[in-house]
Amino acid sequence: MSAAFASGSRYDYLLGEGIVTDDQLQKAFALSKKMNSSVEYVLIEHCQVKKEAIGKSFSIFYDCPFREYDPAFPVPVELLSKLREKYLLNACWVPMSWEKDSIEILVDDPRDLNKTDNIKSLLKTGRINFSVAIREDIQEYIKRFFDTEQRPVEPDVEDPLEDGDLTAVEWEEEEEEGEAEEADEASSKVVRLVDQIIIAAHRKNVSDIHIEPSSITKTTTIRFRLDGLCQEYRRVPNSMVRGIVSRIKIMAKLDIAERRRPQDGKIKFRRKGVPAFELRVATIPVAGGYEDVVLRILASAGAMQLDEMGLTARNLEVMKRIIVKPYGLILAVGPTGSGKTTSLHALLGHINRPDIKIWTAEDPIEITQPGLRQTEVMRKINVDFARLMRAFLRGDPDVIMIGEMRDEETASIGIEASLTGHLVFSTLHTNSAPETVTRLLDMGLNPLNFSDAFLGVLAQRLTRRLCKECREEYPLTLDEFEMIREDYGEDRFAKTKIEYDPDMSLYRPAGCEACSGTGYRGRMAIHELMEGTADLKLMIKNQAGTEEIYRQAVDDGMTTLKQDGILKVLQGLTDMAEVRRVCIN
Image (cartoon, rainbow, N blue to C red; front, side, top):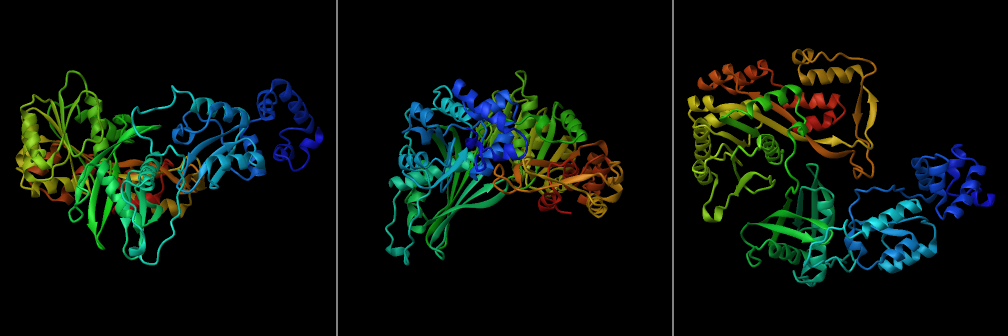
């Protein structure tokens, strides 16, 4: 029996580190036979060996990742359609997920050639990445995956991935594109590819999908925007792009014959094993007679909680105070994709009660909340923000949210509504909170009315959040501390009462499997909240410049976007490179 645990076994690390002894292993081996369980289960339950230590030993021996049981892991319905629960429990392996070029299989012994050959034969692909786990965890995954109550199923919906061919298909590129046979939108290969791209993007929490054909390289690049930055997902030959674009147009109910004009539409995506979600589609003609396609995955979750926005104590106190006012104007500003709509819905969610009537006009509706009366702009029938605003005023509102103040007409109606007893929320594309005031005055708004209505403006940006699984702590040097203090502003930094300490440390990105090697995972907002104080309202009436308004806002306690970002750097949430990337000096 001791020979089973000689050098060259998967328990070498445990033995070498003194975590277990030969005697303990032999007893665990004997007990596992009596209990009909794995040796690893006995070591964990009876010898108090940590699963992490067993995982490290397995990873070193098999040279592959170790995976523990995770009850939140999504059910890979599309990989299970031709597999049976009893067979997988007996064989002790289970498919976990798929990428563009491989399928991940969880198995108890990746070196069992008979088992791995059977897996490759059954799945009809050689592109397999093996992960290892203890037998009991694999059994838990299998039981949960085949539990019908755990599997989200959309009835009466075609499953285009049911044949299991989920991995990427390599096409040989022709010398001349004209010689390649083009795939049309009805091709099963095109249908599967489009669905694979969309599902992969949704599972990776991607915000946008970019499909970009090139007449120069004769290939089409598909890129995902993840955490605000574009990453290449895969490339396909141009012989497929017309079929891909036409397939997307059909799904979005667009005109597939129109290739000369931009088109906009929406897809309601429903597939077995995937929660239903929507995508906003935009097609744009480009050089070479092709069309670019951009798909925005719309958030399916509800509104964020106000306390989860990441506001500082001062900003949170001010925001909670102004959003309960009976009337006035509150603005969220920033560039496209900076989370303005998410923030407004968090504010609305905080005041959303049965005794308050809330109307919203959005383009498009991305977040839904019970209790809100939400309408969508429809330009084809001339239903814009201004027209909806006028309709809302006849709809007995307490609170109105306008997706964007794009012109003087919409802004004027918003000011008028806020002065007639309504609380109005809206967004604007400006770079900072003080600049918002001068922008609206430049639109032609009456400064007296605007100053009376103004409650506050929240400017924000999104920075990537450091991955908690792999971020590296490092000591903060005095030179780095001085640079941070200079970026913050020495006079303002003194008021934070943060002093240099040799024991201070910051974090930097490293990269791991959880964050796809980027070192960042998810995004968070940095804020700049300017309150409509009496002094600031007087300056608006006098049509003061941006610089004067900025100085007054700072005196009133406002922290700038960069200052808020630096405070989050010191908390270990992000790094200075990210703050500098999204903030101007």
